[in-house]
Image (cartoon, rainbow, N blue to C red; front, side, top):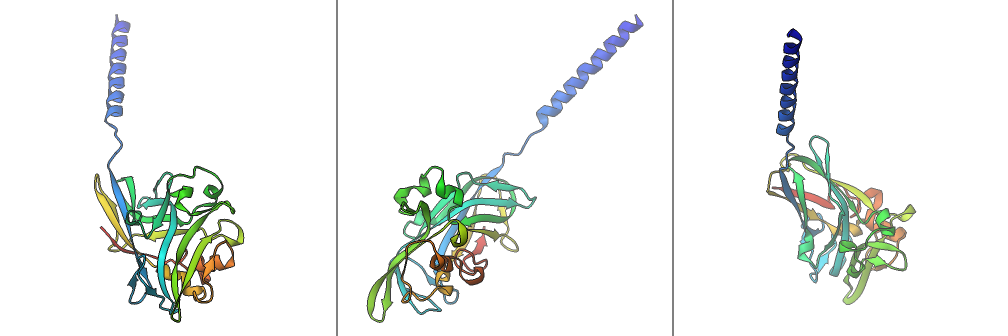
Length: 266
C-alpha cells in the first residue's frame, strides 16, 4: 500500500514538472519589432562653397578650375550591412544599388525589416564585388540594360561620368567609365559610415529612420589630372584607379571624410 502511494506521488510530481516546462516554453518569445532605414543622398561638388551637382547644370572644380556639365553620373553601392551596438549585424540580401543622378528615386536607398535597437555604423562597398562580376544573376541594379557592364571585359563599370567641359570657349566631351575588380587595378572599396554623437541611429518598430548623406564627386579630380589633360577613360587601369581611389586613399571611392559625409540622422 505504501509503495502504491509513493508511486502516485511520483507520478503527480512528474506531471507537474512537465506542465511547468511546457508553460516556460510557451512564454519564451523573440522580439519581432522591426523598422526601416532610408539613406538619402544629395550630391555636392567641392568641399568649400559647395555647388549642388545636377544633370545639365555647370559646376566648377575648386582645385582644377574645370567647368563641367554632366549628362550622366551613375555608380554602384553594394553589400550593405548595419552594425548594432551589441556587435551583431543586419545584412541586406541581394545588396546591389545603382545610384543615378538622373533618377531621383535611386537617390533614396531603402532598407527594410531592421530589428529595433541602436546601430553604430553602416558598412558598404563602392562598386560591385569580384564574385558578382563573374557570376550570379544580372537582374535589378545589375541588369545589362542599365548600361553599366563591359561585355568585352566581363565586368561592371563601377562609375560612369559623361558630359561636356569648357576648353577656353570651346565645348568638348568627357567620358569616364571607371572599373576594375581584381589585381593591381582593383577599385572596389569597402567603406564604413559611423553613427555617433548627435547622429545616433535608432530603429523603432514600424518607424522609418532617415540618414542624410552628402556625396562629393568632385574628389574624382582631386588627384587625377585636369579634364583638359585627360578627358576619356574606358577601361580598368592606372588612370581609372587614380580617379576612383586618389593618392593615399583620398579619392571618391575611398575618402573616409568627405566623399560620403553623414549630415543628420533622424
